[in-house]
Amino acid sequence: MNITVRVWRQPHADAEGQMVSYEVPDVSEHMSFLEMLDVLNERLTMEGDDPIAFDHDCREGICGSCGVVINGVAHGPQQTTTCQLHMRSFADGAVIDIEPWRAEAFPVIKDLIVDRSAFDRIIQAGGFISAPTGTAPDAHAAPIPKNQADHAFDAATCIGCGACVAACPNGSAMLFTAAKITHLGMLPQGQPERDSRALGMVGQQDEEGFGGCTNIGECTAVCPKGIPLETISRLNRDLLGAMLHGSR
Image (tube, rainbow, N blue to C red):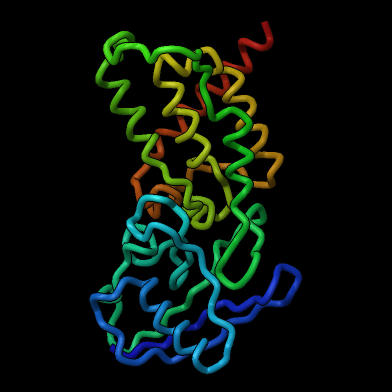
């Protein structure tokens, strides 16, 4: 395959960015998208140019580190992580636009790398449970109905990649925040902080500058783990309950 990529190049956070075109010949259809960028970067390095900066780590669709907007879609044409997207998803001679996540709360650091530490601060605002020290309890000590356990597990699969924010026209982080609140709120261990968790994490989300949710659903369409939109409804119920409890 011979392709052309148009990549967002921005040397640092305060610099003006622009799209730069590169020809990438002899691309194997079996390459992952990031492997294609590796090949391009090796060539740029050999030519004395600055390689394209992008986030990655495990390259197994687990860690959530990678993530770019490909032809206007977060993570590209397949509902998966960027590292698990393969070049066979594109036609020979394709022109591919590659951009960073576009959101006020995700400022660009360099090229395709954005600062996603806002997610960390949302977690710090309440994404935890109280765990007493000592011997671990037996696995069957706290019976949990299967329906609740399934919903908690589904929400816990969120890897925090930020695709939901990049896809949302409002730049909302509600799907991420909802997943983190729901997977704890559905379990007995998460009940002591249930109210403070909802208030704290949603409050921090707003403070970080994320937009409001209007239930457009673009977030779920690109989520590599398929977090359902109903997770946001669960967050809204927890938030309303916390506000009502606080007003008593």
